[in-house]
Image (cartoon, rainbow, N blue to C red; front, side, top):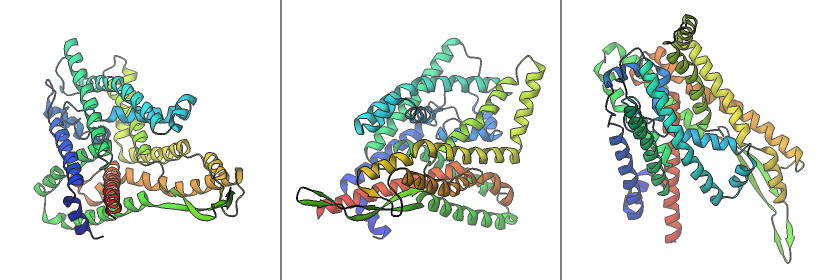
Length: 426
């Protein structure tokens, strides 16, 4: 089906059109909220502070752009993402949570409820840490807060996170993409016009070649991200014939898809969280009374300002966390046991342990390509900026991966709804 024909069918379908317009309306509400600043903030000093700190710029991505002007939704859905990751890891350790994960939709609803509850204290803690960080900076970004100011600001920031969490769930219910991902996507895309405007304002004829190279690299990178996101290794699986009563079941061939990038965005989120920790602590320690602590803090800050060191650590963390998180979510032995129970087997492999070892080996092989590509995407801006000299248009690798992944997921969900309507009409 051609793109124009699909677009026509989407807007001819009244129900689907209403869903899309509803989702767009909620994203507009989010963008309006992202431009309502909290009182007592020097916005000019705040923007200069973020311009000088690339690591905080990464955190601003996950706030949907609301942190750079300290809006009422400044924390974005970062605390909710953190809570989700915590419960995913705990489900691997705590037997009760693992049982909930296996209970299907009912168990998932209970875990989602726990995630929402944990998001509230995490948002308050993150909000307090951010206020203290801005107060400790060398610029007078935040005025002196009284205890009442602290309480009111923390309530506003926490309520803003809960509000975005609610918007995200409303969007997800419409099955037009993932709500949380779309909120981050909207924040990233909203910054593109400003970047284009800044590039046009500083444009010089001598930059034409650099801009052409930048655009060529950008197109090639987007194509690469799409390829890595969609790439998978199909493991052949055969099902033996089984006789139940007077009927025969099985006797067909299928495949088990293993994605090259099974971990998705999680490794980059982990890496961003960990690489921010030393600089945040060092930033707070610059006002310490001890000369040794201040000297050590300044050394750490200067070390992470070195683009080569920062890029190398960021790359290694992304690669390492890709292996770690894939090991957490991918269980070859469990998959092999399920195949055996269903009468399935990998041709040439014995069911059980040998199949599990084979699946683990294949996963490790394709994970190498996935982890290296994910690490390259993460440090892409550090390469493109100096190479082309077009720093104003550079989008972070994490942002690019989010944008491409969200677009692919949303298009797939819309197409599935179109196919479902075709089936109903037939």
